[in-house]
Amino acid sequence: MPRLIHTVPIALLLTTGTACMSMSQPVVDTIGAASIKALDKIPTPAGPSDAPLQIDPPIITFATIRVNATGTRTISITNVTAKPVVISSFTSSHRSFVVDAPELPATLVPGAKIEATVRFSPKASCRCDGSLTITTSEPRKVVVSLAGRAN
Image (tube, rainbow, N blue to C red; front, side):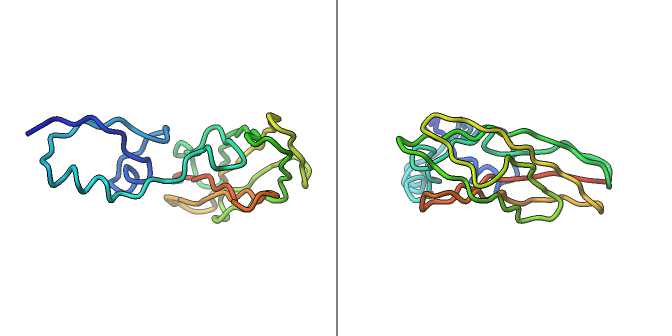
C-alpha cells in the first residue's frame, strides 16, 4: 500500500479525539485507492483568507483548573481586510467562558490589532466546550473554539 502524507483539518482531528493547537496537523497514513477517493469528500473548513479577522490563537484551550477558579488566555484580533472592520460584539456559547474586551463598537483599520481576554470560570466540575462568536460589520461572523476542564 502507498504511504500518503496529507494535512487533516483540525475539525476532523477533534472528532476523532485528538487535540492539537494548530489549525491543521500533518498525518501519515498507509491507505488504498478507495481511501484516497474518500479524502476528496471531506469538507475543509473555510480558511483564514475569507474571514475579516485573524485570531491568534485560533483555538483556545485552557488547562484543567479547580471549580470556582479562573483561567485566562489573551487573544489577538487583527483586521486582515483592505477596509475598516467594526467589531460590534463578542458572544460566548457557554456561561463558563467570559470575554473581557475593549469598549465596543471598536473599529479596526486594515492591519490594526487589538487584544481581548477570555476567562474560564467554571462553577461545577465539567469538560466545557463552547465557542466565541465575534460579530463585525462584515457579513461573515468569526467563530473561535473554546475548551476547558474543571474538577
